[in-house]
Image 1 (cartoon, one colour):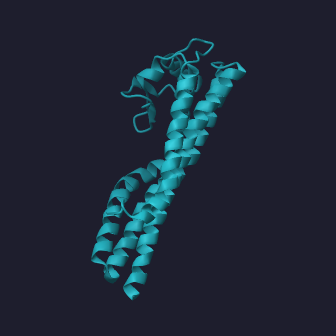
Image 2 (tube, rainbow, N blue to C red):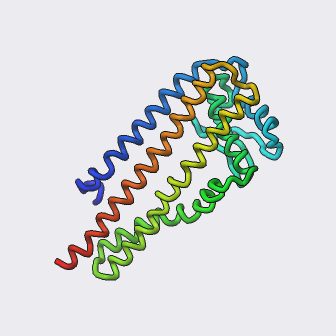
Image 3 (spheres, rainbow, N blue to C red):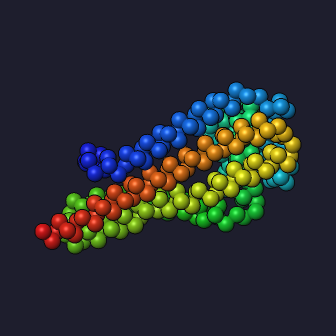
Length: 236
């Protein structure tokens, strides 16, 4: 229904383009630096072990994960999971990704406030995004005063997705800053080329979160415009 609305395309096209650009940037940057071997010949698994020891993260266990670039840190179980391509690679890209996820583990250890905020939002976002869209659509269909009120409640619930995307930005940027500092101070990277490669990989990854935030805001603005117009149509 709404996918064929020209207004939806106007709102979302910039977001779609940003997301596509971000994906292209990540893939091309990762492909480039995954082919450049780090000077120490250290793969992702060994780098993770060294960095976890160096960072005093003895409580964090290390596991594998399935799929390409599925690397993540699970704060609930304190587990660092590395994808096969990162765990087994001796590339600069592998070091960057591994260190970034350990940056999240350091945030968890330090009780980094933005990370706590993002974690607290997860349950509400999971429910609010789906429920909000349902409420908006039902409100539009039934119209009237109740329909408009229901649709606005849906917009409020749907807005949690944009808030979550906004809360994610400082968490990811800080994790990348920690990653670069950790790799340098631990001696895993030493040359300017390695530092440049790590920064390039992390910057490309950060842009994906900026693109996601832009897309979430644009989609929220679209629904605000639709629900905001309901009152005008009713008065006519």
